[in-house]
Length: 136
Image (cartoon, rainbow, N blue to C red):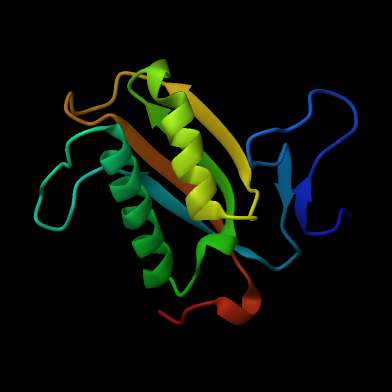
């Protein structure tokens, strides 16, 4: 069994941009599946501009993690949907700021997002270590 954490095989392209080609979780680990987090605040307002929307979507994702007693280091897979390829660099910059040294598996997809005013949506999978499991 592979050690828990990022996996970057020598075969294939190098993962550049603050992510890993794969991420292994230890046996007994639960998973939290986070729905697509949209760039809307608690008042129902969508910020203006890509960077503000990106930061809002990440704030919403972090809020879901906190509600599950987790933090950003629990993320094992992040999928980001961009409304346009032109936002790729800004998306990467904000993501790197939010994640710091943490490198989950990552996919970025250019798509027609549900609401025409939204420029980004972020969904994720986080690992719940047995010691972090929340009683329900």
